Image (cartoon, rainbow over all chains, first blue to last red):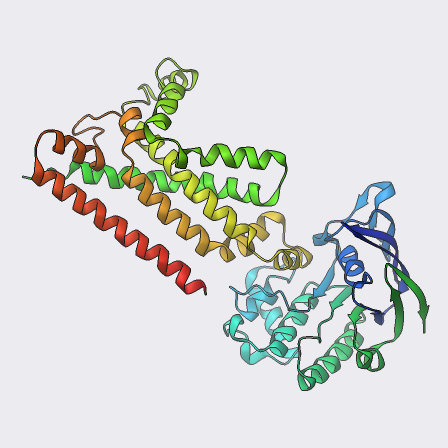
Length: 217
Length: 219
């Protein structure tokens, strides 16, 4: 069984975080105050920022190990990411947002796979709608489908529920839970909301400003 | 009878110049927006010069750079069997250089305005850098680029000073519409000057309305 092993220091101008934890299949919640470095940790796992030292490994793959000069490109990590504000491709339809994330097949096959994923996340009827016109909850469902379209082994969720109302949030939690179980992915969920922790956490990694403190079952 | 050759030549030269300015300008703007170093400011300043230089001075530089005694000019002559200066190709070069800064500045701003998280999302789902640019960044920046292209086209169409220095004023060969208007005024031919000015003024107004519409729709 492959784990995600994170043991790194990540720095941006004026701030740094030391993060150390192991995540297995299921949902690992990164929990702690704003500005403690949770999102920065996700960025390092996604490969959009380079850690200054330490390593990130997932199964056989080394995502990053700066002392050995290893930095796998984001494109090659097979991770999926859902952002707080979805970060969809606004000029593309929901279907194409997902189809663009399907790997190694032609456009027609990608669209078929994308259609199935949109069905699975409950927005099949919006496949060809204007992406700009979607509600917050619909956008996050499309973003979740896009994150899973590339057969991601690691799913990174950066406060995906925080911009949603209570009803949409509840529905989205259920959807994340069932998809993570169904696909057997390693999910990292960044959240401030204690209810998210109660509802979803298989494990919790607690952050205080600039570092992780402990991992608890 | 009105001679329509200058209008036809002006349109042809400015369309070709605009296409060239888009290809080079958008590529350069992309590099300037993505790879910032101390050199980007210098490169951007150099490519902005055509906006602030007197067009005749710009023309003089081009003439010096591309004339029959320059290395570039001689190379062109060997390749194509004719000099670059005082030809329609020379007019295209002058118009391209005049249009470039408008394309570069607008495209650079538009590309920088694309949300970096959306570009990151594209990388994370596996798109190559080239595909991110083609499928995500440039389409999202298209309106801003379009405004710059329209302004660049208007500038190319209206150029007088650089064109007359590099391409000369040969009626029926290199005489563009702005140059023809100048010639007509010198010769006391008010009818031709008036027609030419009205046509150029009309095209400029249409372009400006188009640009305003682009920015109005963005909000």
